[in-house]
Length: 92
View 1: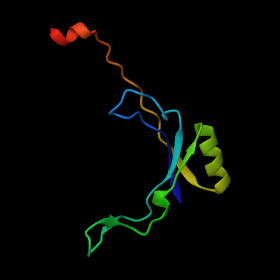
View 2: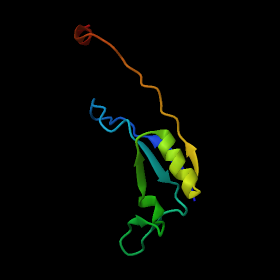
View 3: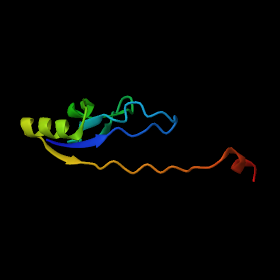
View 4: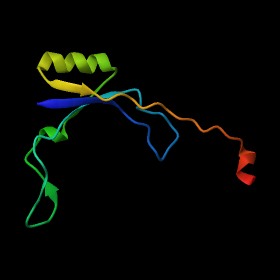
């Protein structure tokens, strides 16, 4: 059972930063999704894919994974790039 720990990304559709301080432990998929022959929907028998555990910091997520014997990898948070410009730059 492998998992990855990452920080919630900022929503691309909004400028707010709500819930971006939370860390998420998400299990890696153990089997590939297959198309259902009747409906055509993609699915699998992997129930761990539905589990997302949220923690207040990366250390709490690591401690939980170590306590439960889950191997994990931490995905670093990408740096935020700000493009500062004045409103008047829209008319140049």
